[in-house]
Image 1: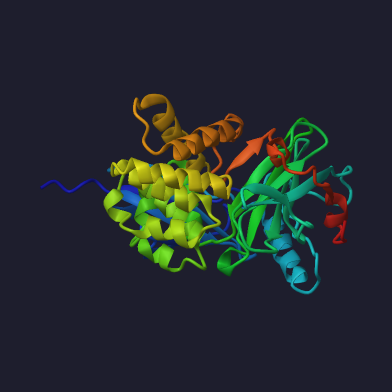
Image 2 (image 1 turned 135 degrees about the horizontal axis):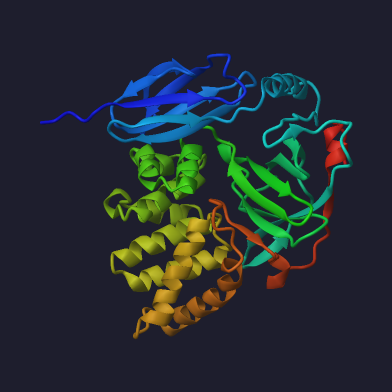
Length: 403
């Protein structure tokens, strides 16, 4: 038997070429293989590897590389300039001593300082979905600016939001130009999911928004892999999929991400019964009902699948884009392609109503975002009250004061 030729891997961090930074090298299941340094040539068997670097400010940066036999590859990890990292470390120290302190970071350009031109003011409002309808949040939670930078006239900001109650949250944000954006917030007011990271980019013509989980562990890596199209690697990270669900109070969103990865691979044997439990235990999470409905449909249990699709719609919009895609695909199959109804008349009416409701959202979805982000559509378009907007004054936040 021929042994595959080894591959070579080098990790580079632009701006830090003069210094060898410590790395951890892990396999696709996140098992630690070795410790190394940037700039070092690593000889490895072909396969998938996760590289993790812990910066001086405590942030963790990771990259995935799938190495082929005989391949030689250099992977870049973006860390920012050395001065930026030092400033970030100092700002984090100050933030622990003073409420509202801001960590200013050049994560997508130069750090924003007091000498810069006036920063834009954005506006936001938060929504929840309960009892079949949208409800505006009474007030925005505290907003902590994690990163803030300007690059060629484009302002990039990342803020931390905390959930102030149970259930699923959506943010609607708008700038001085362009259409508002509605984005799902991967937080649920419980366990390790009580906060998330909202990222905004404003080029003066339009505002783009997305959201990310705050976890730096297995769950965030699964999300990163799904966004990058590395579905097999995301599924491999799951190990025993039930483990994410059994920690349901702490991580149902992780269980949902795992379910989407397994469905994309059609690995039904690895789903077992836990999608049913996720759907029934987390009655506020549309994604649980979506995953279970799709599992049922692929097993040929279409009548029950149809009922869970209607239930998912009753809970609101899926948090993840994958859920929206699966719902629409299954709805179109049941309503447009099949000659015979899959369920009773009442359920079929519910399916038709759901397809009509979801279609306008789906046509405006941001296709590259793991978390659902929709430009140009508001809960008000579904009859929600026109709730007031709150200004997000970045200039005031940059100075460490409340807007």
